[in-house]
Length: 133
Image 1 (cartoon, one colour):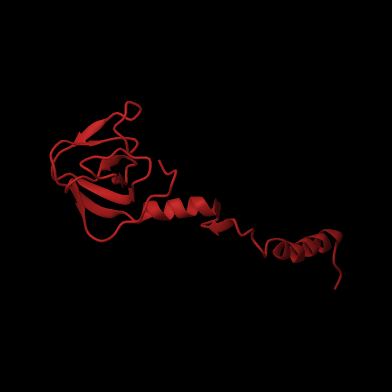
Image 2 (cartoon, helix red, strand yellow; image 1 turned 60 degrees about the vertical axis):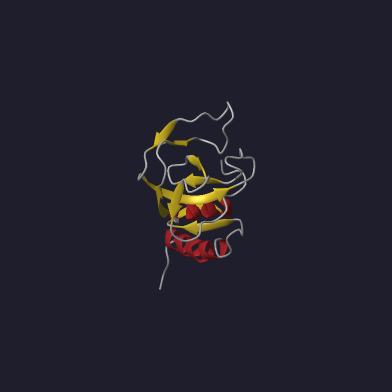
């Protein structure tokens, strides 16, 4: 069997490529033909685990961050019965509301105070990553 120089080079490259990519970096994961950092995958997976919830009070204010300070004004309100996706619970760098430092991060990225029965849902929810908003 006689190989042309092009076929020989192609065969040589094909034999080297799998070895070059056999050991991915531990900080990089391949998923759906895209590269994600470990943190991006963790945050993406957290957002996928939406827990259906419901607003239990009328006029529940939502914000871009879990504080009531002037740098984080309320940007809207939910009516009682509004369905929401509960993502995680945050209690660091938050404003205490009704003696509770807890805030709920919703699937749309907004936060609502945990308060006394402001939002209901079934099952447990994870702690928000520090720095996730």
